[in-house]
Image (cartoon, rainbow, N blue to C red; front, side, top):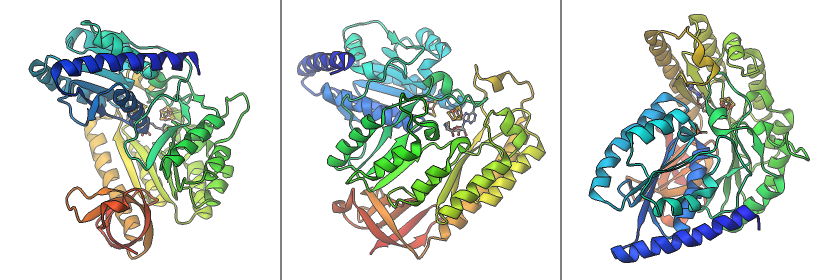
Length: 465
Ligand code: SAH
Ligand code: SF4
Ligand code: F3S
């Protein structure tokens, strides 16, 4: 076994002893809550945190009034940061009522020195701070935290070796995310991710494939391959492998019925990938293809390395190969220097593509990124007006697209008993849309055909066939 991995297993055993002692003294199990913000990467990281917490003997609940709360933070936009400070405010209260309580903070926000400084100065009741590059050391850091009264801070500026194969606990028994690469080299001018997640690193295909095989044997039927730009997967490996090739190999794993991936950068989406997708019915007919802007001028400034025309041509190639594919996207409104004309180009792309759904974001200035130095910020009233126009356009298109499936039969992976009505189950179509239909818990984790009786805007009411 890898030396570092061996060390972490030693700390897992050590943390387990400390947790056991504490819970014996208290006469009850110790509880832990993980609060996850941000993207699928963080969701996956939280499964790793959960795996370690469970292995050391914590009872992991979703609650924030636990003996240990872990905040897995996001910093992609300013409001993500503000949310964290808001939570910390009321956590201080919980801590007053439970002297045993510990607070740990990790994730992308902790990779920013100014954030760590602020917590160190103004939120002295936080017990542990660590970053994205040393998450695998969580057990070791837990031991340090449990043995000390001081705030423990361990944040690395750069990524070390990739340490995988520690315990993980999946949120769902039947589906999971799988990291195929970490970090990002694209440096889009507005984006903080390359600074907080480090340089692009791909995992060896054999490691990824054996991880997925083990999941399949353990009952997983859906995997989501994760990376900030999966289309550049494998380019820097000693023996380069394309993403399309990796994907093809994943389709060959028995027991894996559905494959998704996130995120696809339009600049490197190859025809080879389109071919592999079109040729396999295990790969979901869904592609998330972030546009960001429809203006070639703005795209250039954003360092996205595609144009309005090349994006539209790509959409055509994808739809020619897979006419039924669902397309979703991300769009930023109010990028510095964005004019009325630029915004209209975005609206034009949105109208032409007719996305199944779109995440729309107001540009948020991230200190340290090139765009933050720009002085030509768009006035708030104009941003708000554009944002409202864009939102209503994408919502109308989404509703039209959703309506088209009404009356057809779709394959649904059943996820859970419906939260409002225990006679219903809730699951997802290949295009990720939610469907509710009559059924029981025996269906959870199964993929079943469902007649989509009624479209209710963004979800469906169905009947099993
Ligand atoms: N790697 C993915 C995106 C990850 S961040 C990609 O390249 O597509 C998710 C989304 O957040 C981005 O697609 C972008 O639309 C949005 N985003 C990133 N930085 C932002 C900023 N500074 N302001 C507003 N939205 C931002
Ligand atoms: Fe950010 Fe661009 Fe990398 Fe996506 S590709 S994470 S938007 S820098
Ligand atoms: Fe946020 Fe980090 Fe993801 S900044 S969007 S959680 S990579």
